[in-house]
Figure (cartoon, rainbow, N blue to C red):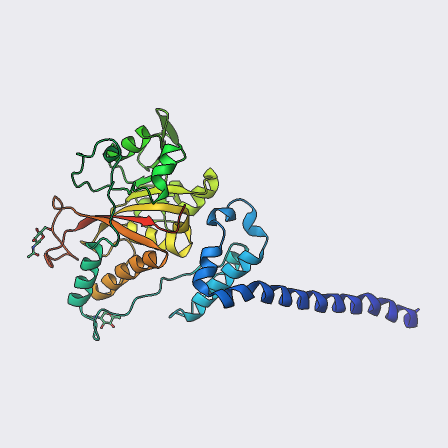
Length: 357
Ligand SMILES: *[C@@H]1O[C@H](CO)[C@@H](O)[C@H](O)[C@H]1NC(C)=O
Ligand SMILES: *[C@@H]1O[C@H](CO)[C@@H](O)[C@H](O)[C@H]1NC(C)=O
């Protein structure tokens, strides 16, 4: 029996080996072919040619098409050139797309790190609009006299899609806040016909609908799990990442993301950038706080300011443009715990995603 058994056992094993080799070759060829266009057209064109990020929602991300291969490669390249080589994504994440773990830090503002130069560069950046926008609030559509400077500004100029999506009743606003009671902006968007989702961990029930267009959700947006700031209020189970909420709600796009997160905005913004959620967002209106580094932002003062600046540069890299900046003179005029640089502790910044439609 033994002489016969050997060939029988070997046959399928060899065939399996051959099959694996062939499969491997095919994969190699397939991948190389799908990478080729990017190499010719350049990274920028390939980025532009990617389909709407929304397509990864649901189960779509599970199968790897050529787009996924390109996207994956883009990120791999990014990881390779990243300063911190030691950080590798955990094994579980391979099912999802490869995500980055750190933003790339911009060079220091001066040859030797100095708070003075970092602060001047950063403050100049957040007070200098990069593009102009003529119509910046809902009233300005009907009443041109309504042009008082308001903190929460959106761009309703014709060349950006928001105004068209409002007119066709497709607009969606996500508003992130921590128990703030000023809902004027949300109401004006709802009155304009937008679907408004307000995320506020302090409300009583899980989901409440108000009128036709406003929903309140007892959820707090987090950059990871768990958030110590929220855990202190024993609301741990109600914190989620924005990407998770988008998936759960089945939403692929947010026309406007408003965030007033009392210093959690820096880590939230970082998370949205690292997970590419910003690509699903048309306009960002963020209140930023600079009287202290913010939740889980560490390092000396110049390192902190350089990190803030680097985050905003990442937005610029993703074709977001700052069109409105509002310095809040009613808040303490503080910059990293000091009265310095004539800065306010609080600015409201509005960006439009010029790649979005
Ligand atoms: C702050 O920390 C960075 C990185 O650790 C260091 O290079 C820099 O010299 C420090 N800056 C100041 C002003 O101490
Ligand atoms: C300080 O800021 C205020 C308000 O933005 C501005 O009006 C003023 O000109 C600034 N002062 C200096 C010295 O830059």
